[in-house]
Length: 311
Image (cartoon, rainbow, N blue to C red; front, side, top):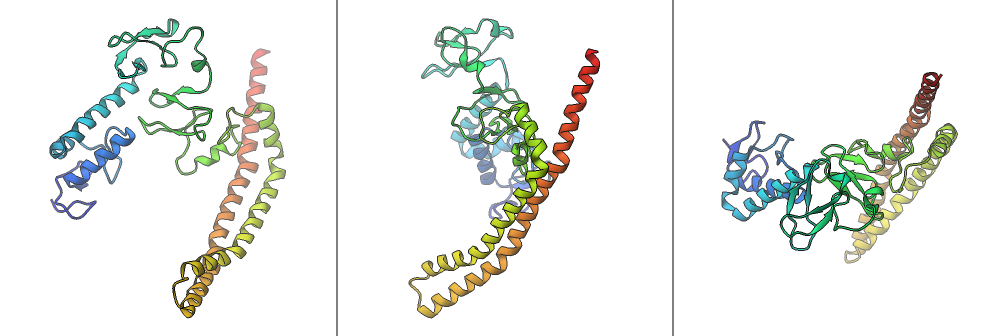
Protein backbone atom coordinates (compact mmCIF):
# COMPACT_ATOMS: atom_id res chain seq x y z
CA UNK A 1 0.00 0.00 0.00
CA UNK A 2 2.98 2.30 0.59
CA UNK A 3 3.37 5.45 2.67
CA UNK A 4 0.90 8.25 3.21
CA UNK A 5 0.81 10.65 0.26
CA UNK A 6 0.56 13.66 2.60
CA UNK A 7 3.11 13.23 5.40
CA UNK A 8 5.27 10.49 3.79
CA UNK A 9 6.06 9.30 7.32
CA UNK A 10 3.34 6.83 8.31
CA UNK A 11 2.11 3.79 6.39
CA UNK A 12 -1.13 4.40 4.52
CA UNK A 13 -4.24 3.06 6.24
CA UNK A 14 -6.36 2.68 3.12
CA UNK A 15 -6.48 3.49 -0.58
CA UNK A 16 -9.51 5.63 -1.36
CA UNK A 17 -11.75 5.17 -4.41
CA UNK A 18 -10.10 8.26 -5.92
CA UNK A 19 -6.73 6.50 -5.78
CA UNK A 20 -5.12 8.50 -2.96
CA UNK A 21 -3.75 6.81 0.17
CA UNK A 22 -3.47 8.38 3.63
CA UNK A 23 -2.46 7.38 7.11
CA UNK A 24 -4.82 7.45 10.09
CA UNK A 25 -3.21 10.59 11.52
CA UNK A 26 -3.73 12.60 8.31
CA UNK A 27 -7.31 11.35 8.02
CA UNK A 28 -7.98 12.54 11.56
CA UNK A 29 -6.55 15.95 10.67
CA UNK A 30 -8.84 16.09 7.63
CA UNK A 31 -11.82 15.28 9.86
CA UNK A 32 -10.75 17.90 12.40
CA UNK A 33 -10.48 20.54 9.66
CA UNK A 34 -13.89 19.57 8.25
CA UNK A 35 -15.47 19.85 11.70
CA UNK A 36 -13.97 23.32 12.24
CA UNK A 37 -15.62 24.71 9.07
CA UNK A 38 -18.63 22.34 8.88
CA UNK A 39 -17.47 20.92 5.54
CA UNK A 40 -19.43 17.68 5.10
CA UNK A 41 -18.96 15.17 3.65
CA UNK A 42 -15.27 15.21 4.56
CA UNK A 43 -13.30 15.77 1.34
CA UNK A 44 -10.18 13.92 0.33
CA UNK A 45 -6.93 15.67 1.20
CA UNK A 46 -5.83 15.64 -2.44
CA UNK A 47 -9.11 16.13 -4.32
CA UNK A 48 -12.80 16.83 -3.77
CA UNK A 49 -13.84 13.17 -3.54
CA UNK A 50 -15.56 12.44 -0.20
CA UNK A 51 -13.86 10.16 2.30
CA UNK A 52 -15.76 6.88 2.85
CA UNK A 53 -17.41 6.56 6.26
CA UNK A 54 -15.69 3.22 6.82
CA UNK A 55 -12.25 4.83 6.43
CA UNK A 56 -13.20 7.68 8.79
CA UNK A 57 -14.57 5.26 11.41
CA UNK A 58 -11.36 3.22 11.46
CA UNK A 59 -9.18 6.34 11.68
CA UNK A 60 -11.21 7.76 14.59
CA UNK A 61 -10.97 4.63 16.72
CA UNK A 62 -7.87 6.02 18.43
CA UNK A 63 -9.56 9.40 19.11
CA UNK A 64 -13.06 8.79 20.50
CA UNK A 65 -13.52 12.45 21.48
CA UNK A 66 -12.98 13.54 17.88
CA UNK A 67 -15.34 10.80 16.77
CA UNK A 68 -18.13 12.13 18.98
CA UNK A 69 -17.46 15.70 17.81
CA UNK A 70 -17.53 14.54 14.19
CA UNK A 71 -20.90 12.84 14.57
CA UNK A 72 -22.39 15.83 16.37
CA UNK A 73 -21.10 18.33 13.80
CA UNK A 74 -22.23 16.19 10.88
CA UNK A 75 -25.71 15.87 12.38
CA UNK A 76 -25.93 19.60 13.04
CA UNK A 77 -24.84 20.41 9.48
CA UNK A 78 -27.46 18.01 8.15
CA UNK A 79 -30.17 19.63 10.26
CA UNK A 80 -29.09 23.12 9.19
CA UNK A 81 -29.67 22.17 5.56
CA UNK A 82 -33.33 21.46 6.30
CA UNK A 83 -35.33 24.69 5.85
CA UNK A 84 -37.99 23.50 8.33
CA UNK A 85 -35.57 22.80 11.21
CA UNK A 86 -35.11 25.42 13.91
CA UNK A 87 -32.63 25.55 16.81
CA UNK A 88 -33.90 26.86 20.11
CA UNK A 89 -32.10 30.14 21.00
CA UNK A 90 -32.70 29.75 24.75
CA UNK A 91 -29.46 29.68 26.81
CA UNK A 92 -28.44 26.14 27.63
CA UNK A 93 -30.96 24.55 25.27
CA UNK A 94 -30.07 24.59 21.56
CA UNK A 95 -32.59 21.83 20.85
CA UNK A 96 -33.38 21.20 17.16
CA UNK A 97 -36.94 20.50 16.08
CA UNK A 98 -38.93 20.33 12.85
CA UNK A 99 -41.65 22.89 12.12
CA UNK A 100 -44.63 22.81 9.79
CA UNK A 101 -44.25 23.97 6.21
CA UNK A 102 -46.88 26.72 6.70
CA UNK A 103 -45.39 27.98 9.97
CA UNK A 104 -44.54 31.35 8.42
CA UNK A 105 -48.18 32.45 8.64
CA UNK A 106 -48.06 31.93 12.42
CA UNK A 107 -44.40 32.52 13.32
CA UNK A 108 -44.59 31.96 17.08
CA UNK A 109 -43.26 28.47 17.83
CA UNK A 110 -42.47 26.64 21.07
CA UNK A 111 -39.42 24.52 21.74
CA UNK A 112 -40.59 21.03 22.79
CA UNK A 113 -37.58 20.62 25.09
CA UNK A 114 -37.59 23.78 27.22
CA UNK A 115 -41.00 25.22 26.23
CA UNK A 116 -39.31 28.47 25.26
CA UNK A 117 -40.97 30.55 22.56
CA UNK A 118 -39.15 31.77 19.48
CA UNK A 119 -39.83 33.40 16.11
CA UNK A 120 -39.93 31.03 13.14
CA UNK A 121 -38.92 33.79 10.70
CA UNK A 122 -35.83 35.32 12.33
CA UNK A 123 -35.02 32.29 14.57
CA UNK A 124 -34.56 34.51 17.62
CA UNK A 125 -36.50 34.60 20.89
CA UNK A 126 -40.15 35.50 20.44
CA UNK A 127 -40.93 39.19 20.06
CA UNK A 128 -44.29 40.96 19.66
CA UNK A 129 -45.27 42.71 16.47
CA UNK A 130 -43.87 42.17 12.98
CA UNK A 131 -40.52 40.47 12.48
CA UNK A 132 -38.22 43.36 11.59
CA UNK A 133 -35.19 41.09 11.29
CA UNK A 134 -36.83 38.90 8.68
CA UNK A 135 -37.94 41.98 6.74
CA UNK A 136 -34.48 43.54 6.58
CA UNK A 137 -31.36 42.33 4.80
CA UNK A 138 -29.56 40.68 7.72
CA UNK A 139 -30.98 37.15 7.35
CA UNK A 140 -30.99 35.33 4.03
CA UNK A 141 -31.03 31.70 2.89
CA UNK A 142 -28.01 30.20 1.19
CA UNK A 143 -28.92 30.08 -2.52
CA UNK A 144 -27.43 26.58 -2.78
CA UNK A 145 -28.52 24.63 0.30
CA UNK A 146 -31.12 26.98 1.81
CA UNK A 147 -29.59 27.24 5.29
CA UNK A 148 -30.25 30.58 6.99
CA UNK A 149 -27.25 32.93 7.15
CA UNK A 150 -27.08 36.01 9.34
CA UNK A 151 -24.91 38.99 8.39
CA UNK A 152 -24.93 42.11 10.50
CA UNK A 153 -24.41 45.64 9.14
CA UNK A 154 -20.74 45.60 10.19
CA UNK A 155 -19.91 41.94 9.48
CA UNK A 156 -17.44 42.44 6.64
CA UNK A 157 -17.81 42.42 2.88
CA UNK A 158 -20.57 41.05 0.67
CA UNK A 159 -18.53 38.09 -0.62
CA UNK A 160 -20.05 35.27 1.41
CA UNK A 161 -19.33 31.56 1.83
CA UNK A 162 -21.85 29.19 3.36
CA UNK A 163 -20.34 27.26 6.26
CA UNK A 164 -22.53 24.24 5.51
CA UNK A 165 -22.10 23.65 1.76
CA UNK A 166 -19.11 26.00 1.13
CA UNK A 167 -21.06 27.80 -1.61
CA UNK A 168 -19.66 31.26 -2.48
CA UNK A 169 -22.18 33.94 -3.36
CA UNK A 170 -22.91 37.66 -3.32
CA UNK A 171 -24.91 38.79 -0.28
CA UNK A 172 -26.73 41.52 -2.21
CA UNK A 173 -28.02 39.56 -5.22
CA UNK A 174 -27.36 35.93 -4.05
CA UNK A 175 -25.65 35.05 -7.33
CA UNK A 176 -22.67 32.69 -7.42
CA UNK A 177 -19.23 34.28 -7.46
CA UNK A 178 -15.99 32.75 -8.63
CA UNK A 179 -13.54 32.02 -5.77
CA UNK A 180 -10.59 33.34 -7.81
CA UNK A 181 -12.01 36.20 -9.85
CA UNK A 182 -15.03 36.99 -7.71
CA UNK A 183 -13.94 40.60 -7.27
CA UNK A 184 -15.12 41.25 -10.84
CA UNK A 185 -18.68 40.74 -9.65
CA UNK A 186 -18.30 43.80 -7.42
CA UNK A 187 -16.80 46.05 -10.11
CA UNK A 188 -20.17 47.80 -10.61
CA UNK A 189 -21.13 45.59 -13.56
CA UNK A 190 -24.12 44.25 -11.64
CA UNK A 191 -24.74 47.11 -9.23
CA UNK A 192 -23.30 45.15 -6.30
CA UNK A 193 -20.46 46.66 -4.29
CA UNK A 194 -18.05 44.86 -2.00
CA UNK A 195 -19.00 46.74 1.19
CA UNK A 196 -22.29 48.44 0.31
CA UNK A 197 -25.55 47.85 2.18
CA UNK A 198 -27.71 48.02 -0.95
CA UNK A 199 -27.32 47.46 -4.65
CA UNK A 200 -26.93 50.55 -6.77
CA UNK A 201 -30.09 52.09 -8.16
CA UNK A 202 -30.83 51.48 -11.86
CA UNK A 203 -30.19 55.16 -12.60
CA UNK A 204 -26.78 55.14 -10.96
CA UNK A 205 -25.82 51.86 -12.59
CA UNK A 206 -26.87 53.19 -16.00
CA UNK A 207 -24.75 56.32 -15.47
CA UNK A 208 -21.72 54.17 -14.63
CA UNK A 209 -22.26 52.00 -17.68
CA UNK A 210 -22.63 54.97 -20.02
CA UNK A 211 -19.53 56.77 -18.72
CA UNK A 212 -17.36 53.64 -18.46
CA UNK A 213 -15.84 53.99 -21.97
CA UNK A 214 -14.60 57.45 -20.95
CA UNK A 215 -13.45 56.66 -17.42
CA UNK A 216 -11.75 53.33 -18.23
CA UNK A 217 -8.70 54.97 -19.90
CA UNK A 218 -8.34 57.30 -16.92
CA UNK A 219 -8.37 54.31 -14.55
CA UNK A 220 -5.79 52.49 -16.66
CA UNK A 221 -3.64 55.61 -16.67
CA UNK A 222 -3.88 55.87 -12.90
CA UNK A 223 -2.85 52.23 -12.54
CA UNK A 224 0.10 52.82 -14.87
CA UNK A 225 1.24 55.86 -12.85
CA UNK A 226 0.96 53.89 -9.61
CA UNK A 227 2.93 51.04 -11.17
CA UNK A 228 5.69 53.41 -12.30
CA UNK A 229 5.96 54.88 -8.80
CA UNK A 230 6.12 51.38 -7.36
CA UNK A 231 8.97 50.46 -9.72
CA UNK A 232 10.92 53.50 -8.57
CA UNK A 233 10.21 53.23 -4.86
CA UNK A 234 10.32 49.44 -4.39
CA UNK A 235 14.14 49.01 -4.60
CA UNK A 236 14.64 51.81 -2.09
CA UNK A 237 12.12 50.29 0.32
CA UNK A 238 13.67 46.84 0.07
CA UNK A 239 17.16 48.27 0.55
CA UNK A 240 16.05 50.27 3.59
CA UNK A 241 14.43 47.20 5.17
CA UNK A 242 17.52 45.07 4.50
CA UNK A 243 19.76 47.78 5.99
CA UNK A 244 17.73 47.72 9.21
CA UNK A 245 17.72 43.93 9.37
CA UNK A 246 21.50 43.75 8.98
CA UNK A 247 22.35 46.24 11.70
CA UNK A 248 24.31 43.61 13.66
CA UNK A 249 26.47 42.60 10.68
CA UNK A 250 29.75 44.16 9.68
CA UNK A 251 29.60 47.32 7.62
CA UNK A 252 30.92 45.63 4.50
CA UNK A 253 28.41 42.77 4.73
CA UNK A 254 25.64 45.21 5.51
CA UNK A 255 26.39 47.32 2.44
CA UNK A 256 26.73 44.23 0.22
CA UNK A 257 23.41 42.71 1.32
CA UNK A 258 21.62 46.06 0.99
CA UNK A 259 22.96 46.59 -2.52
CA UNK A 260 21.98 43.04 -3.50
CA UNK A 261 18.45 43.57 -2.19
CA UNK A 262 18.12 46.86 -4.08
CA UNK A 263 19.33 45.18 -7.27
CA UNK A 264 16.90 42.30 -6.79
CA UNK A 265 14.04 44.77 -6.32
CA UNK A 266 15.02 46.64 -9.48
CA UNK A 267 15.04 43.37 -11.46
CA UNK A 268 11.89 41.72 -10.07
CA UNK A 269 9.54 44.68 -9.60
CA UNK A 270 9.14 45.83 -13.26
CA UNK A 271 7.83 42.51 -14.65
CA UNK A 272 5.53 42.00 -11.65
CA UNK A 273 4.13 45.51 -12.00
CA UNK A 274 3.82 45.05 -15.75
CA UNK A 275 1.77 41.89 -15.32
CA UNK A 276 -0.42 43.57 -12.71
CA UNK A 277 -1.09 46.70 -14.77
CA UNK A 278 -1.75 44.63 -17.90
CA UNK A 279 -4.23 42.46 -16.02
CA UNK A 280 -6.06 45.49 -14.62
CA UNK A 281 -6.12 47.17 -18.02
CA UNK A 282 -7.52 44.03 -19.67
CA UNK A 283 -10.24 43.65 -17.06
CA UNK A 284 -11.23 47.31 -17.27
CA UNK A 285 -11.30 47.20 -21.07
CA UNK A 286 -13.45 44.06 -21.02
CA UNK A 287 -15.81 45.64 -18.51
CA UNK A 288 -16.10 48.98 -20.30
CA UNK A 289 -16.20 47.90 -23.94
CA UNK A 290 -17.69 44.38 -23.80
CA UNK A 291 -19.57 43.62 -20.60
CA UNK A 292 -21.31 46.93 -20.04
CA UNK A 293 -22.52 47.33 -23.65
CA UNK A 294 -23.85 43.80 -23.44
CA UNK A 295 -25.76 44.61 -20.24
CA UNK A 296 -27.16 47.78 -21.80
CA UNK A 297 -28.32 45.89 -24.88
CA UNK A 298 -29.85 43.18 -22.71
CA UNK A 299 -31.69 45.76 -20.61
CA UNK A 300 -32.94 47.54 -23.75
CA UNK A 301 -34.11 44.25 -25.24
CA UNK A 302 -36.10 43.43 -22.11
CA UNK A 303 -37.75 46.85 -22.10
CA UNK A 304 -38.69 46.59 -25.75
CA UNK A 305 -40.00 43.07 -25.23
CA UNK A 306 -42.07 44.16 -22.23
CA UNK A 307 -43.46 47.13 -24.19
CA UNK A 308 -44.37 44.92 -27.12
CA UNK A 309 -46.09 42.51 -24.75
CA UNK A 310 -48.10 45.33 -23.20
CA UNK A 311 -49.18 46.58 -26.61
